[in-house]
Image (tube, rainbow, N blue to C red):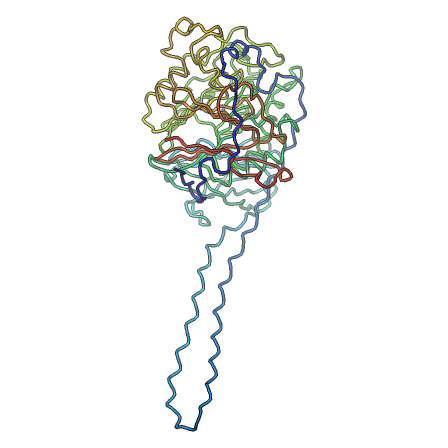
Amino acid sequence: MPLPLPTPPRPPLPLRANTPSPVRARRPAWAALASALLVLGACGGGSGSSPAPAPAPAPAPAPAPAPAPAPAPAPAPAPAPAPAPAPAPAPAPTPAPAPAPAPAPSPAPAPSPAPAPGTSSFRGTVVLGSPTDTGIKANVYAPDQGGTVWLAYGTRSGALDAQTPAQALVAGQPLEIALQGLAPNTRHYYRLHFQPSGGAAAAPGNETSFMTARPPGSRFSFALQGDSHPERLKTQFDPDLYRRTLSTAAADQPDFYILMGDDFSVDTLDPATINQAKVLERYTLQRPYLGLIGQQAPLFLVNGNHEQAAAYLLDGTPNNVAVWAQNARNSLYAQPAPDSFYGGNPTPVPHIGLLRNYFSWTWGDALFVVIDPYWHSPVAVDNVFGGVDKRASMWDVTHGDAQFQWLKRTLEGSRARYKFVFAHHVMGTGRGGVELAKLWEWGGESANGQFDFALKRPSWTEPLHRLMARTGVTIFFQGHDHIWVRQQLDGVTYQTLSEPADPNYTLWNADAFQSGDKFPNSGYTRVQVAPEGVRVEYVRSLLQRDEAPGRVHGSTVYSYTLP
């Protein structure tokens, strides 16, 4: 049955209502694909030249609050009817008393006034991250402004009765502000106050809000996007379409938003001139976009192959691409570290500290688990930085024993009704979903069909897919393939996610998926979670010029429910 969305309410969408027929594959054989996978391209190709990144848009000004409607005027009394003429003179009857006038209707109560719009001159962004039941982190960044900032916050809109200490904000340097001691399962409202350097008066920004963690039995929603690739201007990325996607997703008020990787593509930078500043720029480029949703929905980042945050690049010094990429990521986006609320990777890496690359948390009736195929493989998993060569054997690629053992403990130890696992892709490379799930450490078979798992992974109890099936994983989410596909294998739904800003609305890599319901770009995915089921919806994103009857931005292209 359709599940109602959390506040603000929206009408339930009927399952597959007004849904075009999906593109269905007709070739049943996946085995031939396995042998061909070793030559399949990286996510969208290797590290060849690409267009310059699109300029980031300026944040949109907040609309002025609408005036409260005036009460309707009371209706005028009806005129009295004229008396009929008497046929003959007669004594005048005693007049009846005039009826009392009807009371005027009471005016409708005026709606609560909207909070006043902000008057701040702040040109930067706030991006939330690492929410818990009693806290959250706000990452504040302005590329060209410095001054003093603090957050005013509370549980009632327009009545923010608490604030953080004032802190110095340096232009071009992110600042992380922690809110602690918050009420669980509660919507909190906040404003950023900014006082520019030079003595100008402090002023508040617009009010926005977020949720703290929900307890079991709650209804909530979250949203996801596939690869955004802002470096692929016009071919797979349009700034206006990306902004439209994120603004529409934000209007749903999801509790959080998950990016599935390839959002900060470092590997298109020139190896001869790359430096820390250029890597950082790939991460700051996304801030004006991601601030559209990240100011209210905390962001979780999944590592992608084009990020080049990978172990094979480490050389023991602080001056290498992997260190620069991970430090930029962690400084600009507050990702979880292991604590009483989050599980995760406890092992620090020289010149970085905690990677914060794989982690887990429970929210409502669901367990969320993010895994990383890149940071724990001693060889390049997909494209090699500065070249196109790939590894000779997929058995050389690994998630690592420590990550596998952690994942096993996490899935086995959770009593959550639903379990969601997120990775950039099955094994971090290749094309397809369930077509790859029987191969290598994910499924145990070599490309020739031989089951070599015990020989190749002697310390592992089972392949990754069998672990997910045995422990009741509801959905495995992946990006990488630039197409929206739903598949199932052994009770596990494999959900591949579309790009959010492809202006050509392409059906990429469809031939790699031999089964499932397939749809082209662009859009985001909305997931509603309730005690009675999970509803997954693919929400269409279109530029205004591309809309037409039956083809509307923000409409649901396809949906399904799982008990």
